[in-house]
Length: 377
Image (cartoon, helix red, strand yellow):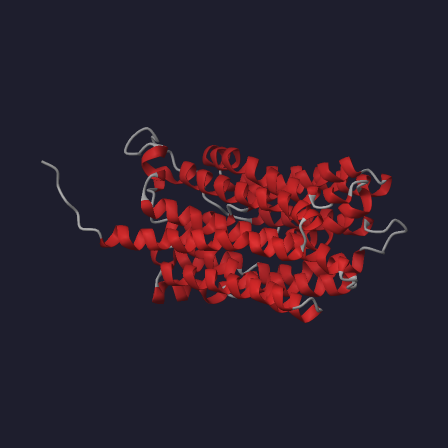
């Protein structure tokens, strides 16, 4: 799944620019992918709560294959709209696939849940190698440029379908969800829940906005496609290599410190983007952006699991991912327009208030934790 996502980040905006008449719509296909992820999160969680993770993941594979086919036809016919439909299919697939990390916590001992989340996301290390390189190697395989990229998407989804068939995941337990559960408002009003969702959502939005705009800015700066693939590859490595030890860092230093460290790394990324436009500036900035996202996303996910009971997991996870990927979709939609109309520097300025909001949220949680409990009359 992550290989397809890194492949899409490398190529979707460039393909969109090639197919779209209005170049301001270049990032629309990737934005639609994030919108599809957003709209899929709640029904996917609820559906898998009834039919189980395995059947849900297999259903997602079928939808992803249809999306991959639409992408192939869209590129072949030079149809921007069909290509957009194809990216929507990959987004629905990802909307289901983002629950891999929660599936891991459900089959792991309680004391290993942070490590389980990290190890699932560590699959992105392979994705960092596979996705951008596959995009670069496959774009000219066929006579129609970029066609091979979406053929690769179909092949990867087929492999994952086989993987799902071999998985052994427990079916959902027979619980009476009307008993011993709080309302969604009660769960969502907890300071810990609010800060967990805010951390993951802001980290994702900042990452998506800068990640989506970077390939277009590199193209505007006349860098080669191979350079774009190189930068995205290292960005994805930055996103997922830390997963081997992020869980251990959370266990040792606490969730709040790790999330705050992630926010700091994103600020350094912005400073690097202001300092130059060589390949090495883009490389170092996106590498740190990836590590910052890893700390904020895994930290937010870890904090979230402390805010609900097993009976409340489906609706809590659904609300979290809906908010997170709504933020990601908005960021992706705005990236192309901001870059096209305002320029690269203002894109970077735009994310500073978001990072400041994440820092303020953690300050509020810290103060809330220190506030003495008082009783009423």
